[in-house]
View: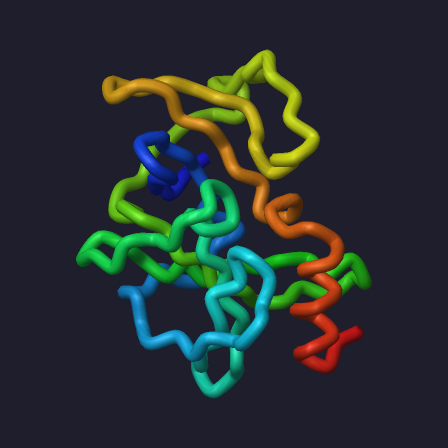
Length: 153
């Protein structure tokens, strides 16, 4: 399996590329006033408005840095109604990939109900890497807000 690596703070995470539609440079995002923490706004992707989540802000409470290696990762997100929607994820240092078998990942030994998207871990020459499950990244309330706003709920 192939994974896109990115960072949150100093820690490294992996996203299964089968969930990814496209990795873009950080583009202009229109903010949404009074949006929940982590909802950065919306951008136009091939003529379609797509909500954007700032992974850093969602997880550690600070916005991602706007750097050359910060990317907008467009992913498929199941909406719970049998449909798949697009969302954009702002991810820092999202410029490398890693190949691993599913069996190379092991449970971290820590269950965190506040961060259900955190999956098993593996290591490479640079240290620990934790998988992120896109389907569990957003709270049910944020998912409802995003999908209702797009006219799908």
